[in-house]
Amino acid sequence: MTILIPAYEPDVRLLNLIVQLQQFELGPIVIVDDGSGDAYRDIFSMAQSYGCTVLTHKHNLGKGAALKTGFRHIREWDLHESVICADSDGQHLPHDIKRVAEAVKLHPSAGMVLGSRKFTGSVPLRSRFGNRVTRSVFAAATGGSVYDTQTGLRGFPHAMLDWLCAIPGERFEYEMNMLLAAREQGYAIREIFIETVYLEANKSSHFRPLTDSFRIYLPILAFSASSAASALIDFLLLFVFQYLTHNLFLSVAAARLCSSIFNYSVNRRYVFGGKNAAKVRRSMPKYFSLVVLVLLLNYALLYFYNEQLILPLAVAKVLTELSIFLFSFWMQRRFVYS
Image (tube, rainbow, N blue to C red; front, side, top):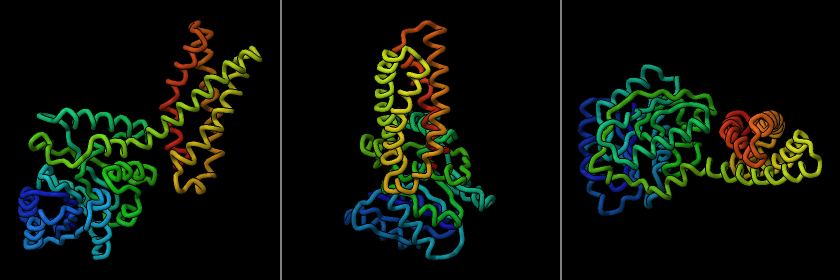
């Protein structure tokens, strides 16, 4: 197997990791210098003297780009061996990297293996909170559960390399896209728990809290914006049709029809489609089948809140939309636009 380590402005911990990994004799080590610059040339020269292959980006392109550069290079070797990705900052212990490697070797065709941290002990608040939020977002988006969505310790069988090179994303969002795409493609995601190591409160991390978090959460942010606009249209039209017809079911149906046409167009083009929007036009029958299901749920909940609990129509409508938001997102991600 091959160890792949993306590195941006590393320190002596990268060299220590190399030496320790070589003692386990897991296989060749490929390091991608992601545009660290002349100041770090000695570190990478030393890595080469240790027998590692060093690939270099002239400019910083991001962790996702570095991983894909490594994947493409390893694919050209045609060794048909698994690949284990680890970070360069010393937060993945050599024996845990070996455990992930052994897990991939044991089931070479079963999908990816994640070295998941338990987040116990002294963990920076932003890391603990960030992982908890991302874990919840991932569960809502896919209906699946991954304990540590942000771990950089991941193992892959050789057969997944072509697929890994085709996943979009150049920076930290690439690792989240990988997990989302894996579930859609039917690849298994297995986890083994590893030690949680944060050195100097994670000061060595190049993760940019605002920019990179935005990239990671962009899909659900886009979906939320689309849903909010659709909900506003649905909300206003409900009162218009109710005023005109005094028929709750007819008002719900007419308002939902109008808002769903808007929602489908926006989601297909901007949220789930993007550059491939034309390829997902076939999603229309599935989407409007979901609309019928959501319509029935919408009416049932609205009737319950408004007629049974005697809540004002505005309050009942807000509660109804909150109740079906996550269900709608999961169904669209998993069945409509997958």
